[in-house]
Image 1 (cartoon, rainbow, N blue to C red):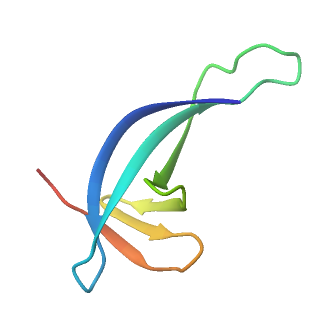
Image 2: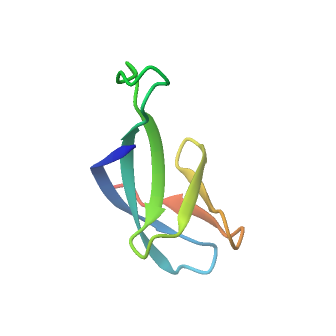
Length: 73
């Protein structure tokens, strides 16, 4: 599976701490070896921790459960 960095942004937790989040499009291999038509979107912190997208501008750190809100430019 290959991943392509397509965006990065900052998000904040309830206490105001800022987290750099990277958005990737991953292209998983199909069972027959061909590339699928739609990429899978994943999010990670700059340090590698996985982030779940909850919808709109809300995210959640997978390991700790801390909820984040995307900073809008």
